[in-house]
Image (cartoon, rainbow, N blue to C red; front, side, top):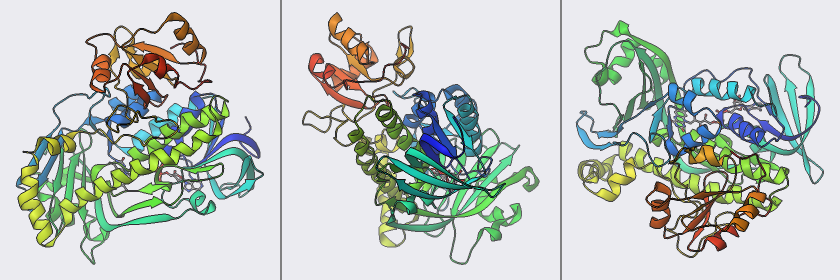
Length: 511
Ligand SMILES: Cc1cc2nc3c(=O)[nH]c(=O)nc-3n(C[C@H](O)[C@H](O)[C@H](O)COP(=O)(O)OP(=O)(O)OC[C@H]3O[C@@H](n4cnc5c(N)ncnc54)[C@H](O)[C@@H]3O)c2cc1C
């Protein structure tokens, strides 16, 4: 495939984590794609530090779960503290791994993760990444194509490439978003925060989870990111900037509660930066063949560490659908389900982050009531306690690819668990990017052959095994699971369930 002037099935603008992830997923389906980024290398500054267990399944599907585990560490829960550092409430994550097969909260360094994503992409023969390529415009080119213009920042030459689909993964100030006439809708949140990354060879001897300091004057967050890496975030007061805190000495008044007794020379500042945290959602995520993903489509304050998680969910949601359309086994209309499924999910997660932000920062009587009366009692209420430590996110809305049998509390729209299947590896590895029918009931041989012909795999849920319990709790005998692990349909009749597997499902080699 030529990486300049010409045609490519999918052109991805932006080689941040979201762009590289969707490129890898498409390449796994044999879809040729070109990724353009204005810079040659990954953005070197630390940003995201947390991914949840659902999103680690996406990392696993990229084929780099073991490599990611090697550079990450699990966090053991959340403490809410008052301004004097007294613990208001503590939520522990006891289980080493969830039904998704990974720890609930995983701490890491974003540049290290992005370097891993890129080196993995290099092994994909269907994807080309071109750096120093500044995209300047995206226009319609006939009914079926879009034309992308970019400038080579080294030679200054302008190039034009046509693509069947363009994916705008170009971050918060997205050029693609502007090009398709989409605008960010404000969810009325804007705060300036100081973000501090530091290393030390000293043992800080802190509770090994995320500390959220609930203080209307100076809310803050502390967490251990790596063996010797720590992250603090503090709300900035009016008139303060990052320059006021550029040295260990000027930072000490803020970080003292965690580094008391540590000689200042043993603390090394990696980065001290100011960020304006915002909550925004693009009014539309698509025009014709051009889609928005990641920060180009949504922004959230990082109070629950979900910005990048949302972007990786976008990549997973759209990747297999687009591959299905381009490879001819799904109708084009399914692409409408991308925004229909993802937007409400992202809105929910942003609102959850805003609620956490309110607990940390709200002033006045409401804030005091929240912190003094409500928060300390949260841990006593099993439903709420479970919600805080449970990383399960809401089910996707009903649509063409999430079919419910009436009640919303069923399995449809939720992730299928990812247990180890006796002697065969984890569910995700066994199934790969195919549809699966998970069933407690027997499937006749002719039906199996027909499903295999459609590219779907049958997974028998043995009595007593995790998948069988999961189906039983969901009052289903069988479930159809999409290539992204989401349940398309679950019901009491296995034959009816099989009917929900698309007729031209992906035909891939047996896993
Ligand atoms: C302080 C902080 C803490 C955070 N903590 C978390 C957390 O714990 N967990 C979490 O999930 N998220 C967190 N986030 C959010 C997370 O960092 C972002 O959501 C994530 O980086 C978005 O990825 P992306 O690929 O969509 O965009 P980006 O990472 O911004 O990548 C966009 C890419 O597009 C390229 N680009 C832009 N314009 C053009 C153009 N015109 N032409 C060519 N290339 C272009 C850029 O060079 C860049 O490489 C945090 C963010 C911040 C700031």
